[in-house]
Length: 307
Picture 1 (spheres, rainbow, N blue to C red):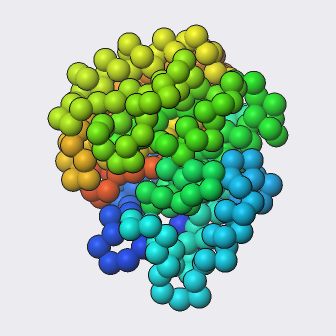
Picture 2 (picture 1 turned 90 degrees about the vertical axis):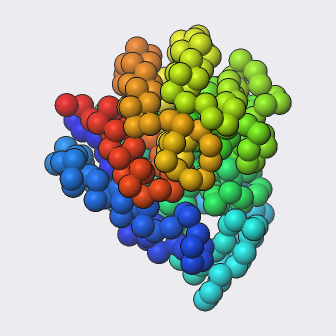
């Protein structure tokens, strides 16, 4: 049994222009940290497959998927919104990122891995049913969760999102699905401006003010997330693992540190052990300072590895 580490070389080929923070070097920084922390000895590597049309259409409109395919350029960049662009490799990279979530789901539900981490890009949690935004094209975590629900018949799935930005796309996918619980923290007011309205027993979104750090984050998890997760008793947990709430990541204004990511991963692991046979699928979202990203992913994986 092991931690599955899922990635693909095509995820390195997607680029959105010089100076863009969501860049290929993010994955290289993670690989470097795996080596220096010796985590590369305790993971099992898998290549991400291409997500199928059927898998995508569980959470995205057919017209949207077709439009993205048509927009894929033969050369140069096509701008989708001010922050989000496609190069000739983007569409396949996005299919690989969504496919990684599917493979991770299959590995943990079949018992071939204890947990899975998808080191993929583009990220996904801002992608709505018919809209690319916030560096995201397909909602990877939603594709994985829907695969668990529809292909494997899992009855209750939880999505844990600690990115500094609210996962509006994930909420868009599952707002009306009683089989899914989403718990999240995010800076507010901040991009994309969502997450405050529409809170419910299944959409446990906890906004944090700029400057909030370990104390506020851990209180939100202990007082809001954990009771909701216990009530829901998920049979499988997904993590939208964004590390841009770190105090040294210049994209935002929260002040988390590596130990917070290790701690919250441990909390999620304990919930999974009680209710989900330990099954966790984690997917990379944000995190843009390369050194910080590598350190935080290592802290996260150290808690997922079945030592």
